[in-house]
Image (cartoon, rainbow, N blue to C red; front, side, top):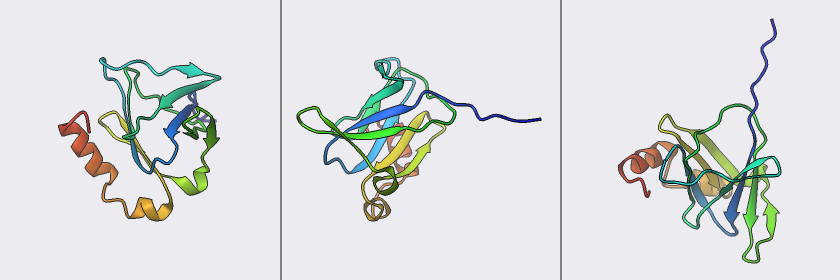
Length: 126
């Protein structure tokens, strides 16, 4: 018997140019808007604080997500995921976490997925 991997629509994460730190995506919040879709991707537009809120539920399965820096003029530059995207995780609370920055910045970050998840559980505007 062969077992196949499930796939999902990939995400395109749009991050303000120069952002360094943890991105927190909060899913399944009725007061937030659904994620837009464009060119076969869910589009996640990250705030200057590194936060996204959506009424959509998290999706599961394999996909190759794309991360882009968005310049002030609206143009984008693809982020090298091998050197600037770290620590991706999904919590049981419906949040997704990923760090944008160098490996050294990630390792020296005072926050962890667990500490961010705890803080966001106490303060939804974390």
